[in-house]
Image 1 (cartoon, one colour):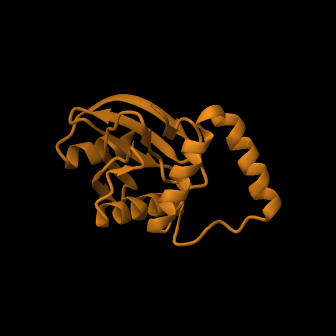
Image 2 (spheres, one colour):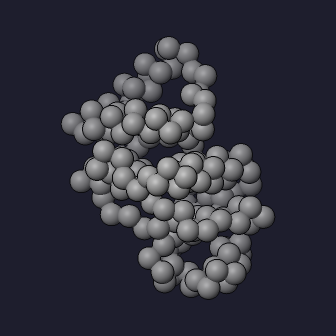
Length: 154
């Protein structure tokens, strides 16, 4: 929590509540309709996520096929922290597990297993989620960490 507090202080924000945590870091809401995500010790995932948000900013992407995409407000490479806008469903969030400008080098068998798992997770929403995943490729963003919690349908 120390890095999140430091980031918030530097940017004039107040942390409100912890929203969650996962493999790549922890997320807190702020008093400014944003969240702060502080990455764990893996710099690679922080840099990927930061660079994907910068790519989306460069192309003014706020929505993909009707799914809201949060704007990056600020970042700090030393603290491995991002401030991101809060979005309402339908949305696409959490790009730490995504790849930029290169698709993951998985075998055809692994991709088939991945798709079968995603089809089961998303159920009737899989065709929508799959279209969103495909749409991100136009900006060189390859989403692989796909779940109903980070591609939330309406």
